[in-house]
Image (spheres, rainbow, N blue to C red):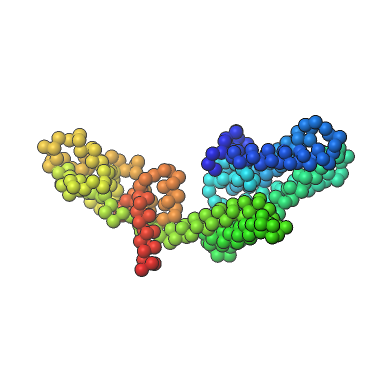
Length: 374
């Protein structure tokens, strides 16, 4: 989340706070501290606001516990947790990757609400069974109530809420397609987002007593994130229908190792500025290395007719390759993970198909869109 401040690590997980969190912290401290001062005049001085601040910290600690619930289950599945961030609307645990099965996805999603429900039971038992001072009892009761609300709100079946991820896992199980689960749960999340926006708008206009400006903000948050999730899943669904071979650049830079440097320059370099590196293949068309136009400077032009490309190639060990029948979505994930600009595509027998770039993927999607529009 942009602008977030790292303040340390929790159980090896980087922990961030978004600047918006400080606004909510101050707001809760002020409003709840004022309520405590009015309800318990005997507190006096700044003590109500000190208790209000403690209550605010405990509330966010509950949110943090909720996100740790997701994180611990993900870690148990071998999924690294990139970070946990607290922000204006709660918390967010960012995972390195998705769960591999619907059941695993369900367990990660439900873990947060389960933690919140357990905290609700814990604080409720403490509130009703222990002889606490009235102000402390009020804070503990508030924590019980907030954790119950946190659990129930997050179980709303629409993304980006936990209930949306539960719904996603169920649709995934039924259809066998995780993208369909995200798209469906994202659309449901948009419906709830619009309902919250309408309720908040009517409340602000004085037409309805249900809702508030916060309802409007939460609705907007749901709309934005649910829409983004559904859109991303739609793109992923499209990409999953293609293979790496489908996105190979038509004029991929492939040359034979048996070419002389003069032939290579004349046929592939002069008057052609697009490629500066070329994949080099043997007589069977299999990848054996690469050559860069910059490497030609090592050899005097008078020797170009005598020296072949194979004498200047760099070994293929450093070239990232994917199989031609590999899902294009998997290829994109590899490109993003390793921060690659291009990748070589080869067949099962090692024969080179061509070079795949990010731009060639974009061109493929454009061609599909234009074909549908025609």
